[in-house]
Image (cartoon, rainbow, N blue to C red; front, side, top):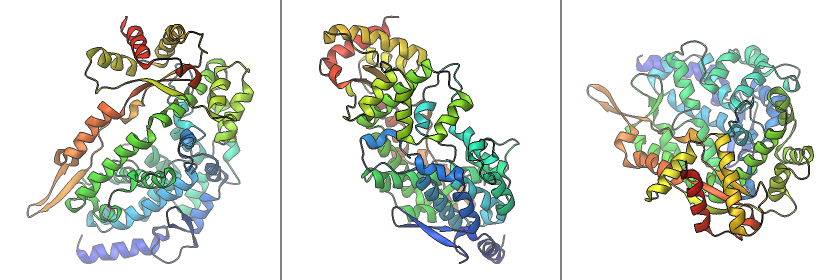
Length: 476
């Protein structure tokens, strides 16, 4: 594409796709932290005003994290607006790349803008905690699948006067199924190069979703880690990789991409997986597991309950639904009762420990399924009751294993201009920071922790707990 043809194509796209926020035809703005003006058009407003989208006002972005960081009460609604704004920013900068501008249509741009807006529409209270249980034989609603069903209008409670899919089809002139595929990565047919590029804007090492939540979570948690990179330099250096099927960065943006990935690492290390946050998360997961072990609710029946509640009312519903002696009520009263009593660490296992028995115990626990973990907890609790000098409640001890979906190396292609054309390298091959982050994440950040109720922890010696865990894990 010639420079003049490129200029004309971009001008046409900017003029016709008012959601890019540069044509001056936006109907208004909404302000979100921190000092962000998200431009609205009529069709964006119609999606945002839909009952299915408004429901996200009731779903906290970080679940139980607010029990530790009191400012972390922001919602999936705010985050979704922020991601939409970031997609606008990505597209405005990517359109400077002739290959991108030549390959995309108005429908392509609107599809990824809609995906940014709707990528989390399937979330419900404590979705990640419930999904982390992986209980055999249980039909746990996956928020990605729920999102697709909501867009299609398959959930009566959230249909409204028209479905979200109807708005996309009739007002945005895009295929709702393609929007769903860009959100989830599940394409019915072999995706085109453009499909893959759009997907990488929503999900990749430096995607719009991560760009928003790193900054937004940092603001609300009151920590600096997710904002320690040069945002403007990063987005201004967005381009396509040599295969033209994923976003990449020019060499000038290498350090910004490097620090972006490191910022995400520090957010996990110092905030998302801070030991007290993990205690609160583990308590919620254990409460949900205990609920599911005695409840017949699953699939659509469980989903109906979830989408009717916000985070707090769902916890209250769990308490009211179960017997007074249930582990679910016991845990939630510690977490959400009149007096907050978060569980305490009583021992920790990490791959970084040099002792062979601790390394072996870590790997065994890390690879246990839910049933094996529950059996192990029962054995450990029995041994610790002796150490504590009194019987422990069935929910007094919890094993917290880190999610296994964060083991993938986060990298991005770095593109260098050259006389022969373009040369690119994966960022982790150029940066010891990025390659080291993955090693350190696996070795240090992904800890396995044993938590106990405060009254029980006060009577337990960490060395005794470690010995009991090692004995029970390694005896087979």
